[in-house]
Image 1 (tube, rainbow, N blue to C red):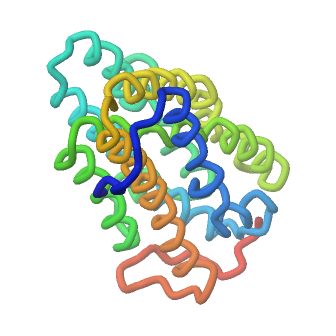
Image 2 (image 1 turned 45 degrees about the vertical axis):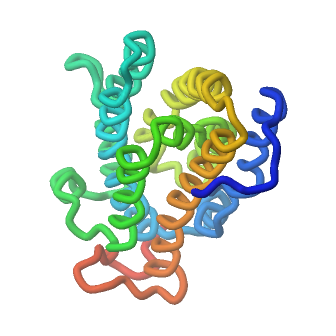
Amino acid sequence: MTPVQGQQRVAPAELEARLRAIGPERYHHRHPFHLLMHEGKLTRGQLQAWALNRYYYQSIIPLKDAIIVSRSEDAAFRRAWRKRIVDHDGDGIHPGGIEKWILLAEATGLDREQVTSQRGILPAVYYAVNAYLDLVSKHSFLEAVASSLTELFSRDLIALRIDRLRQHYPWLSGGLAYFDARLTQAPEDAQFALSWVIEHARTQAEQELALGALRAKCDILWAQLDALYFAYVSPGWPPPGAFHPEAEGARK
């Protein structure tokens, strides 16, 4: 994520506009796997593969956020950011996003132990998700925070997904609590992170690092769907050890 040479530092409003422009161009709402999902064209087995593999990503979100918290010397930042950990881990009384994702996976017909054991995850999904941990731990703190800004684009995708999953896969309706919660959590988190990035990207080089980190996060999300599409849609070649749907052409 090397800064682009020859560009000048832009005003905060322009930086925000450039960050927001990354979504329509690179966010994974445009991926063919998601398009098939929203058109009701995925089989139950393909949805199972998606839920299973996405669980690995969900499971590292609080780890990612804990890394970010550990890197901050600002108590106010840590107090604000640790909310994200509770949102996903729960508070011991109310379930968090990880538990809600397990319920979604169970609604597809998967067994809880199969999901939480992470057996059958595609190797490319492991690599992509682990690259996200590398990004937040090994790159600059500004890049770590900026990488979370995909949440700027997620609310519209989540709203569409809830509608289309209920429409095309009514048997999933009881497992959509994860998405319902993210409709409010994601915009709140995104606004805090956006304000922080705009305030702390004070040079042209820092602005370019923030933009590059957001593009890299979009690439990480896209790569996970590439792996799913290759393994379970076309050409349909899941690698050795990966999850295999119980029946080809399982009912939608």
